[in-house]
Image (cartoon, rainbow, N blue to C red; front, side, top):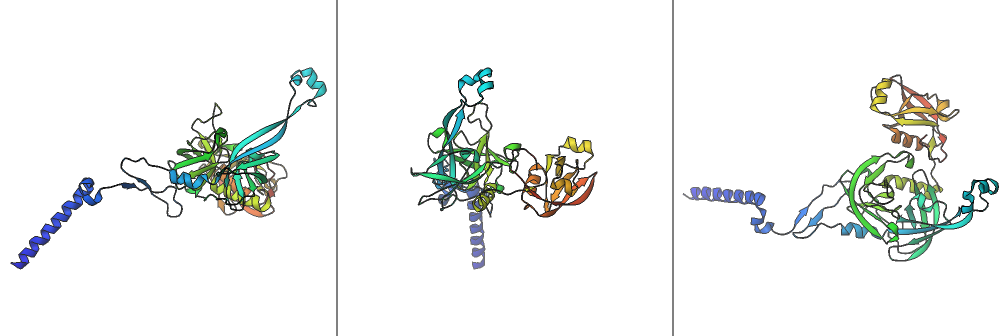
Length: 389
């Protein structure tokens, strides 16, 4: 009899627990201990989360205020002046211009406005090269309102990056995120000083990664975002939902000169590597082959009888260059530089640039559908805007 009672009791408890479990899944609000705010958990990478879990209480909007609060203290306004010579209107007359040339040009002071990001307590700032190019004086306004002079440590026009240093106490450097782990759809915030209206935060998503914009940056692939970026935002921070730096805002596509939904940022990983070289040596030293390379389109691969589109095809070779001496030929497809496999134009340029000048490396090329390994002694690249290596 006692055994039967225990069996009935056990069955009743099992049925009750099962019912509670089903109700908690289907109608959680019916279960008292399930009431209250819910948490929207965003999946995070174990090594470098691109977003954080955002509490969303009932009746309360999701907010990125913590990410903004963390990052804005590290973003500054940069005001730089430079002297230029403006042509005298009289020289619009071709006869006068022929005889007098530009001798009657008028000196003029221009103001270059942009933003920057504090990257160390020692006063180093990251910004765009075009913000400080050719300037004679730099004034940096911090988030707390202080204005201090700055000096250029070095710049790299080919990635449009520059390092400026200031002498100030109490600086808060930004935290670097993992830009190589960004995904399309990740939330990002753009921080800067557009149109000199004051520090501004805008929100958007990552629209694309790995954007190749050719001569604008032959050594890096851009992060594309729809977060509003306008004149004055250049050199400012693009941060993830944790407030960590994932990019340096640098340019926009626009027919009006203002925001139209397509902005670009230099990945923080590339910016950090360039910054470290500039701080250490005052500039960036890159390897050089002396070749012009291009991506392989499916149509080009078919016309040349190639089995795929991997690598970069050689379309020009400078006479006497490292590539010329190393035996690279027109039409060769570069598929590896040293130990690095390359998939396209950008990865090929970066692989070549990362080799120290003077070092001899094996270079694998596909020639008439056969893989050939050559030895190339790398030269030193001179800065230039063209898409060649």
